[in-house]
Length: 231
Image (cartoon, rainbow, N blue to C red; front, top):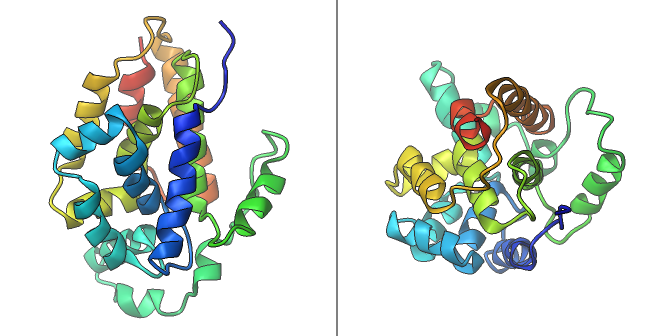
């Protein structure tokens, strides 16, 4: 059966993320806003989040704490602190616009990606590169798993396995990221047709590479994504 694209519920999550960021007065939509929106409009995925302690009320606390630069920048601050660098001082040199400025050459494919990023930048508030990268990674995961459509659970799986900002958000409110990822994997086992180990490894590397190329941060758990699409 042909791939049908984004599920209607997933589109609602993206719109919710925009509304949440706007209502909170935040200058950008980050991956943490996607996670918060997923906890509200994700259907069964929302139930998985709530059962693991990541309710909308709980996540909202972390989302507020991450503003204005976002949870990705908060994760950068923690990383720099671990290296003995004053992360607060370093990040004070950046503004919101610079956080979402692409660095280096972007992949040529898919065609129209640059136009899509410009459209995201014109939203009110703009959709950050981390949110764009996570949303795109979820689509790639759905295709790699040979699913019929891109659904909320795919977004939940990539957010909890790839994105440092979401890892920071969950840690801030005391939710175990890997346990939450495992709960998503258990609740949504996916299609029976799986890729060979070699093909799954290639897809995983490509997914991680494209994420890093756009956001400029390493993914947090490639092996987790590999477990979703490997044979």
